[in-house]
Amino acid sequence: MQAHSKLNSASSEALHQEEKGLKPFLKKCKSQRALLLMTIPFVIWVLVFRYLPVWGWTMAFQDFKPARAFAEQEWVGLKHFIFLFQDERFLLVLRNTLAQSVINLILGFVTAIGLAVLINELANMKFKRVIQTISYLPHFLSWVVAAALVSSVLSMDGIINEILLALNLIDSKILFLGVGEYFWGILAASDVWKNVGWNTIIYLAAIAMIDQEQYEAAKIDGASRLQRIRYITIPGMKQVIVILLIMNIGYIIEAGFEAQYLLGNGQNMEYSENIDVFVINYGISMFNFSLATAAGIFKTVISLIFLIAANSFAKKMGQGGLY
Image (cartoon, rainbow, N blue to C red; front, side, top):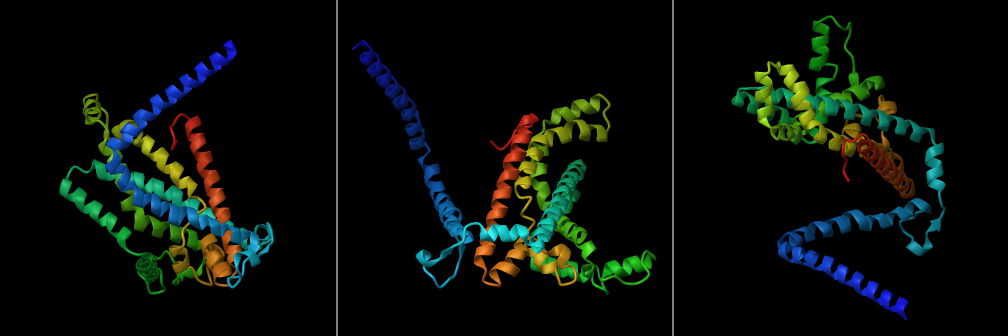
């Protein structure tokens, strides 16, 4: 009887604690109801466009035929995944995807951080705004326009060939987009030109949050400009750099689509074709929706693994993380 009384007492106390914790939560929801109402459209968008389409992953385990009902589809298990990893073309495409992503990741970070630091060091505000505006502009061009510009510049009659010939660096004109080995470098340079200015925005915001008294104290102590950059600016950006690096590593298997599709051709396909282009060419274009879905699932799983691994590694190194 005494044990039963103690059990009831413990249960009532736990219920009381739960109600005690629930009331502040409901009170906070009521006080922030305007913000909660504002999030409803976004939550609906996420559910409709991010979670409901996951039902389509079932196609990867079927020999999907568009004309058949779901109950009439033939289930084939991991057949399409096995085919992907046994297909030499897909392994080549996977190599291209990883190489393009890693090169873009490294160059993107180095150039964006470097440009942000250089812009921050400019004393003339008018000149600083001009440089920022010029560096931002290519970001607002669609890849259709940007790819046309890149193709024109790198064509046989383009300015790059003319400059190289004038400097006697080459003996004859080169069709750069016709040489597969050049494609990764061309893609990386094009991506940097298009997005470096836009990518500096968050780094400039991080620099602006650094206490300016640190710079003043460093000047008084006789620190040079390079020393101030090394010991104040870069450490002040470290947390932002780590977070962005983790997020970008999560997209390491997402090398992009537009640039590769528009700049790629039959002569450089061995180096330009990545997973997204592969899905278009050998999945959707040939109505092999099951293969395309299997490739998409593979990308998602690998991206998730990379994201979790990068976040865990950053936390173990004491640099913080996304969660």
